[in-house]
Length: 165
Image (cartoon, rainbow, N blue to C red; front, side, top):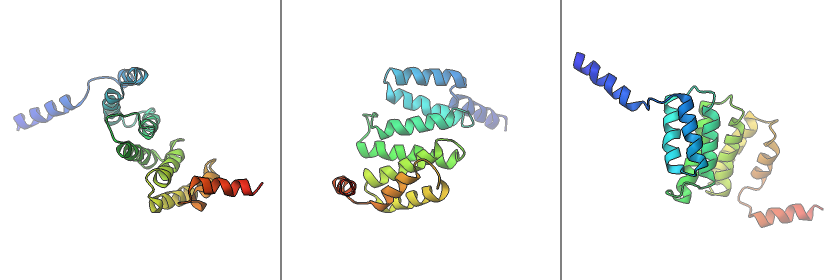
């Protein structure tokens, strides 16, 4: 029994980075500033797993979702970057629903599905969910426009707006 307890403690100790929240945030900021995204990704994962209740967690998740969305992780394909962006946007609005970034994260998931991955059913579901949860949000009008124009090529949308002048 003592051997099992010792092994469990050893595994937990090895799994933790041993760095404080502020040390990890400082390391993360330096890596991002130096554009060492692959290393930053590892530090980010460590931070999120070790400090999920940190006041910074939701903001960091949002920033990493945006990094993936902008496809700066060059070791990944464009689709994998987008899927990771969605993963972190979803994590944000499901695990941190009270975050000021949650509505933006849900909207961005829908936007990626609609405009980049061309999964119109998922986009429609998320835009509708967004509008039901955040009917008065600053992005609500954009969500309605997106819903009204799902699958319509951008040039055709522009013609609609140009024709109304």
